[in-house]
Length: 573
Image 1 (cartoon, rainbow, N blue to C red):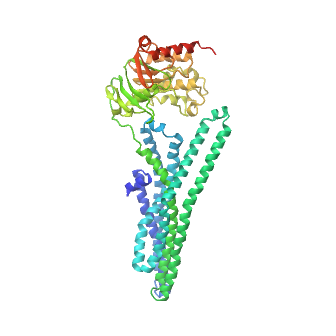
Image 2: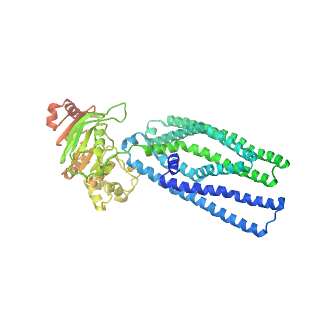
Image 3: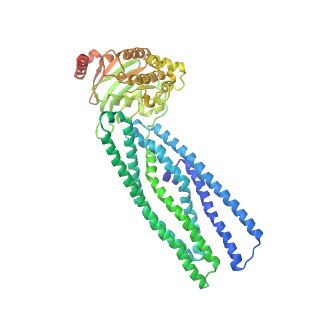
């Protein structure tokens, strides 16, 4: 059963075990509800059928029932809520850990707002179901068959009268399962679409205002909200009609029991005690089923959310063993790669990047340079060929072992809403404040940091919104310097830098690259003319590689790049 709970409701193993305890507690609470009914039957037996029990018997029995019921209800509450909140936290941590292991390719195909909603809203929905629906729903299917057998066994006519309408009523809900799940999923996906649109509007507020797109966006969001309201109404109706229909059918249970029971009592087939017992059973079962019917709708509502959580759990992670890397020579042989099946980005790329050398990748935008860097750093896995570091295929190396050896500065800088000090310290969590400041000086950050209100302890806002593009780029470079990894990957780091800062950072790099493998992308060809090796990439292939002088002789693509660079330098606005 534990495995079934894990699969059906996307629970962790601990959450499934806790839920089993809660189900058992709910089962006992449901059974204990009949203890008060039993007490009532004893009173009727005394007064209607002439049996006489002492008052002390009722006092003791009532006290015992009260104590047992209170203990069981307290146990159920503790299991149902405390363990639920613990599972909610555990489930979010598990999802976050799983996301941490997934390759970058997974995130390129999933919207960030969608993943955020999965961690927060979807887990919250499961949390609510755990504390309100799942335990009672499952517990009902344990005690209902037992009760049905007892009722039918003692008097099959009255037993069937109680049970059959309940079974028929619930069957109406079960038959509508597929339709309810389908409508709930459509509504769920529309809500995700709304969330993505609102996030996009917030992130691109500047562009929306600049290009006068406010009315267009407003119309689009209005249309989406109307669509979501329509779907919400349809999903509610889809759930309400089966519930209403089943409720009408289930009402027959008590009515038919009273009619048949009174008739049987008049004919002398049963006494008032039996009639009362079956009427109470019909009432209790009807109350339980009313609650279960609502719980079933909530469980159906969970299906799309459970599916999304399981998608994350079942997504392929990058395999590999922890490996000691000594030499940092990098070799690519016939590497192929595509972000999707329709378009191949790299088509048999081969070259080597040696330790203690600087290798530059050049080529027009979109030729595959950044993709090569992503494959080398194993943010993505290549499709064909192989990439080795220290003679080992990087697919056989765990990402944790590989990332320890690699410092990356990509063109798109990601900073966190914390202090300058902590943003740089991400490069090395164990670095002292002095080491952070030294890395900042190497990256030419110290000057602008000293002008901030609280210096290194200034919070810089979400993704460094309070900083300029060049300042954000230099913080990212400082982070890479602090890590001091033997492999340094730099993707167009001068794009947001002025000439003076670029020169200072190049000087810092020259001091730090000794003994390291450095791979750099730059569209400013002058900055890479004196590197050890230049690799010319054209349309996903390596056209040629060599020094600046060699490439001017053998590579038409490189000649064109140099020519265009000279024209740009001479251009006057």
